[in-house]
Image (cartoon, rainbow, N blue to C red; front, side, top):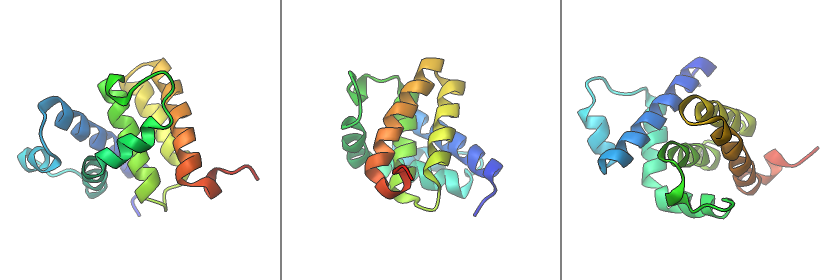
Length: 138
């Protein structure tokens, strides 16, 4: 398992790849193949996974949005929710708190302070459904 700093950079890179896919309207393969240097393996796993499972992820996230449709969210927030939801669903070895904390920090860094709170709320609800045992109070 990569070190924490490596995972942080991989998440940040995956977010950039997902954002680029959306803006350009291309697939993960098209973005990744065009890169001069391949992304870290974990970044590629996250970007490809979130992209390949986008329809399922969007339905999952949509159940937990309040007052917004997923296509009306800012692009960074939308891709960040997709990325973190994929990680919650398909990377069970990563603790829920780590996924949510990293997503909130990325939202604050690349979006707005309000985005951090919104992402936290949505992902907390997503995590409660995706991993009910991990998020249940002790």
